[in-house]
Length: 93
Image (cartoon, rainbow, N blue to C red; front, side, top):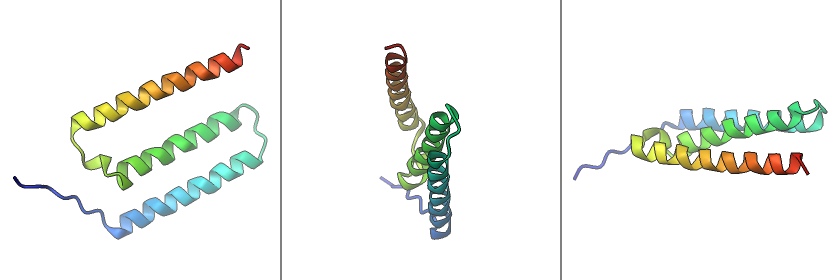
């Protein structure tokens, strides 16, 4: 049985890490400036991008098979639905 290894270069990992640091700085900036409801949605959007980068490159999901990627997508979609239900519950109390 031949196992296929995907080696990600240190340069690419460093670039992703620097991108994550920049997005973290952007998150702090958004948190310190009052931009209304965009504050919450902006923070969530940045968190989604950061999570996607971590999952794709540091957890090597980019190199996995289609089934495993679809299962992860399904699990994250269900999580997003439950978080959305929580927002609606808090919104209409």
